[in-house]
Length: 219
Image (cartoon, rainbow, N blue to C red):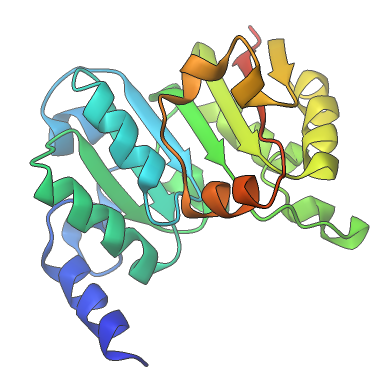
């Protein structure tokens, strides 16, 4: 294991804005994010598969009146987001180290107001489709934790994954879907606030258009 990874794992162990196995709050946070962590009643926004936390931190900077939680299973990734949040003095950011399929272990029913999926692994083979973050089994989890009319955002460069999501979301309890296949050339360009993930930068420079959609949990 590299020295950088070891340092990041140690950072996570010591940082109050990282919730991971071994910390007491990790096992008691479900349904208690506002009271036990953020200590306010502000709306909660989560980013599933947050990677290095570019979106989690970037959104938190733009919206100090909202609470943001980046979720990823890779500790070395979320350590980088945690470090940026601490350096910026952000108190409305947390990082949760867990797998997405365990969302119901950490969030109560209707505890989340908004959810972002930014440049996930598209799992391109048909045999991998059940692992796509817009597969029905994941959408069921999102619906459970989102409030009524809770918003879901998706950004990707991958055409097939985007097409898959355009089908699965309306078929599994989401409505009022709006979408673009070229975000930066669309009227919705202002929605991304200039925030880009590492992979977004890479694929955009290679000439891939950025796809975006937004929808709401159906009643």
